[in-house]
Length: 280
Image 1 (cartoon, rainbow, N blue to C red):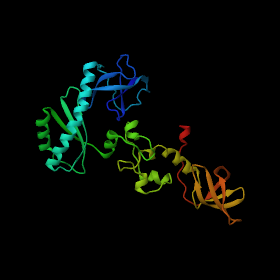
Image 2: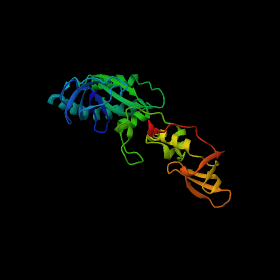
Image 3: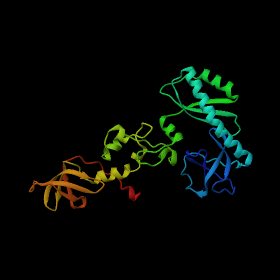
Image 4: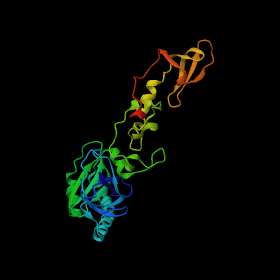
């Protein structure tokens, strides 16, 4: 199906919309309906194809092309959002609420002002909403989000030096577990395997299938294998390089062999057989 990619903030990620037969190119502005309401966004990629059924949610059509009035209104809203953010922070401090304000967004017609925040527990913000409604004279919505969503909205650089995956291209958060770090031979120090959000890094899931397959075909430490120089015990395995350091019975000095040169015989910890991801 044909779609376009639309972005609503410079540091935000893009979303798919149906061009609805319109001629749309990079740099154009369009009016679309989102979960927040009607908004004006910039087209960052013109009409292109994606496999039908590859996207889990319904892709909404573009309402119309944006005109000069829409674009000026959008830019004015972006400027006013900064002021709204600062005023909301002051009200939060005045009410002594245990919450962290993340972002503020106006809908295009300014019929609603949405504030996003994080908090460890439920927050009673009824009085805060009353104050904000009296201040901005529009419908106020306070939406609690998770720390991963906070990173998505604010953006930043990861330990790899690249912009956050979640704010760049990830559409949905993949489940990540400490088991993945163990299978990939990574340090279990939380500081080294956690992202800026404090959760396990999303990139741990990218190569997990490959590690599962490599671990299933690689004899682990303690395994007895047959090498070109006779039987020996694996004392170290590098699943990515495909090498095994083996101490043979007839030699006290360990020697490194290719995985293909060794035949697994018994013992050791062996991962269950996994399908080759390259064969999928």
